[in-house]
Image (tube, rainbow over the protein chains, first blue to last red):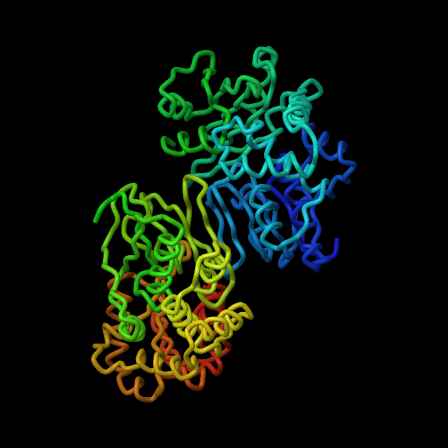
Length: 309
Length: 309
């Protein structure tokens, strides 16, 4: 890969917003005349994202493991270095577009950096396309809609903002499809966990978080049946305990999220499970607890855990 | 001050961009219907900024020392917590608009955060006014122009971007004045150092920077005559050494910047003056060195110092 290329990527363990926003940013750049930028990815595609790209006939971005010193990069859908590519500290970050909290990020020079508290990165990109007066084609509309559907669970997550709702309505018109129908198909495509080992399952969408010396992971899987996933609890716990030992973690939280009813069952292991009990006023039983109405890592899990850890 | 108010402020030791961008952001909010936000300041006005506000008949924003827990705030012209108000860590940061590098900044929640690598914050605010389709009146144009003139030394600093140049041209039309003439008057108003003690002089525009355990300060004064300032070198060094001891600094750099010829004389003291010698390939003599063409702390001093410290 040419060093003069600008590499655009989302976070490790990429989800639909990370992959599709990278592709969208590459397209926005091209439409603005910046030819040398290229969407790449930092990990395997999940089944939901695979469904989105296959459905649109869009090529899967190339995978990269690390970046060289001074490599020009654009980050979408993340800013924390511990969620980014190996070598990020010495890369040349040109721009960040994200909808997460800011942490573990720094640059030597001023750069373009935009975060907004929206439901997904693609909603910010929609505004960028509009601001640059760049046409949003049917394919782009489908990419953006897929990000919104994925990150907001079809506008049902508490992370949903008025901007996501308004944008999705606009996109539905451009794409000229039934969003509800497409969205459910897409979300369900992401919940088939059968050919994942437990090691893979806990890594499908896991985020490393650090606070001072304390490291922990919050992972999430979507499902249409929590009991189906819990059948594998014993082996899931083995996989989690392995990860805790390997990475020296204080806590590993796996949220098994019912995307139809919008609740989560939590499996928590590690020396600091007290944080879950304090943060949510619950008592873990068999290392588990049910959290009614909790679907968002960013808005519901992370702040409570961060507060008590 | 009411807690429900949103407080808008720039960095400690405020300069013209910090003060005027706070006022501009309050005005933008009001024009967008957000009534409860209020520009304040974190320190004494310098003479340049005083000239700007007096010339326009604009009231000086109230000074604050600290913010209460959960106080809603908007930061302009800075993001690093060590350059911000006391209590910032526990405040509720709603938004940041800035043109500096990002460092020592974190939030628990996603927020509105915009940095662009422009010459000053007001150029970003100009774009925000345009985007929101809010009228830029003569007074607003003068405030914006003053920020650009101050931070770019009338477009002569290497921090100047095409956006600042374009914006200043537009503002000149709106304000209907001779920018060159006004700008020189304004800059000169800021260079009168006579009634400052040496303790005050080194604090007129000083920025604390931290890297891990190492703390250092880069201060800057503008002048039309470097030799005039150097007459006070002995007492300036005493004041700097006091500051080093009091704050446990590894390095104190004072840049005495000739705004007419765009050069700086550096006075450097502390255990890590080697950084200046390595960073600029010079040898300090009598604790001083002349840096041809160096006028920008952000673009020329900070990156070189940061690299070698």
